[in-house]
Structures are given as C-alpha cells and as structure tokens.
Image 1 (cartoon, rainbow, N blue to C red):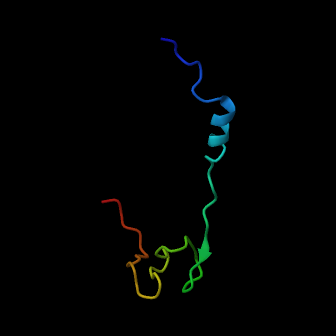
Image 2 (image 1 turned 90 degrees about the vertical axis):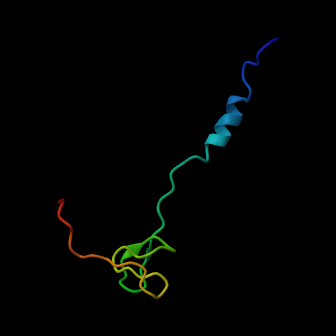
Length: 65
C-alpha cells in the first residue's frame, strides 16, 4: 500500500501557522491607584478588584529565609 508524500500542502500549513504569534499584553490604569494593570484582574499594586479589597498587598520584601 502506498504512502502519501504530503497530507497537507505547504501553503495550507503556512496559512494555519500564520496566526500563531505573540500578542502584546493589554494594560489599563487602575481606577484607584492609576497603576498599569491587566483588565479584569486584581491590581498588583493596591489590591482591590471591582470595589472591595481582593488581596492583601505587602509593601516590604520578605527575606529569603
């Protein structure tokens, strides 16, 4: 039984792979502290998400011990 040389043409494969690219990260300003943050996520600087406090943000760096 014979084997096909190519299942898909090179052009067809290249068209599919043309959409695999890195997109830039979208950033918006936090409504509370105006620091850049990703939309629909907790602000890494001040901590709130959509009003109430989402996380506790520590200002001091912990030592490596």
